[in-house]
Image (cartoon, rainbow, N blue to C red; front, side, top):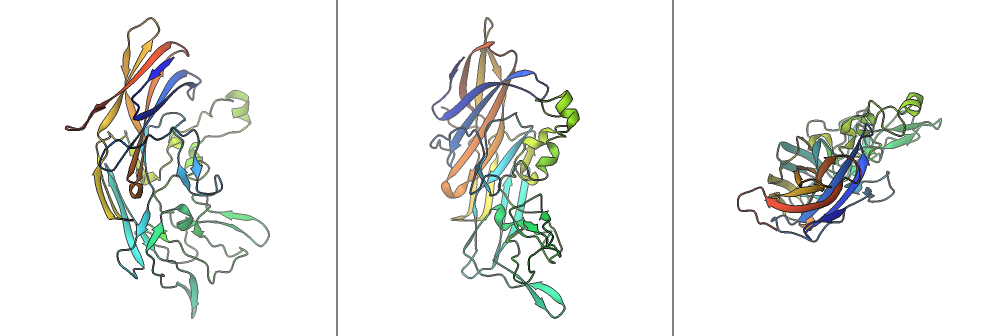
Length: 336
């Protein structure tokens, strides 16, 4: 099978089976751009997730481009919060793209202290910048005095989780640095939703709940295929409020505020889309549509990465050639 594509894109075509065991051809394409929309150094197609530390126990720094097609676009932001002035103890970080409008509150380091008969948070420490990673959002993993684990399954690598039977003193326990403005952490027993912009690990909730039921019945009746109750939402890796149903088109305006180094960013997605043409053996060539699977924003590096996917349903080996071109989808956008 011959695959041709512009040098500005990386591409991979592979035959696989869908959830029901039907054969299909998945064509993955990745393009990298500057915030101004110019073509940047090509991005490799990633075959697995990358992590800042231990795999599965640290923030995901890059997501795989492989797997079944997503029914929505994931939007991922990697950035550091930027304090608005010297000595600032808090700030807001906002992301807006397409239907997404999200704001989180970022606060300097705090600990729990006891005052009279109640626990209060210390005053936040001043900061200049703050990594927007899950290790600084609410969550965590504890062990009780009898050795039982206590985990926030939404973010087991976070901070702020407390349990009265844990072998952990409340005095001096750190509070999260990143919070939802409408759900601020005000008491040690609270368990607010973790706040962040980076990917959700596959074994964290709520993703894990969509994976399906892997029991004896599955082993007997469906293995090695996914369970009958597998939900495609498992494939979405972005936080819930950064998932765009129906997919982004690729020319949306992006607005980000409160991040280093510039503070404010405003630009558009590059406004181009792959045109995928497949040539079935013995038949005429056919154009097939592609959708944006993931948008990864790294403003501090002046880098925007789009991953697209196209599918052909058929028998393995019935495609002799694939040609990928790129067309503008926004008036005035350049062509390759």
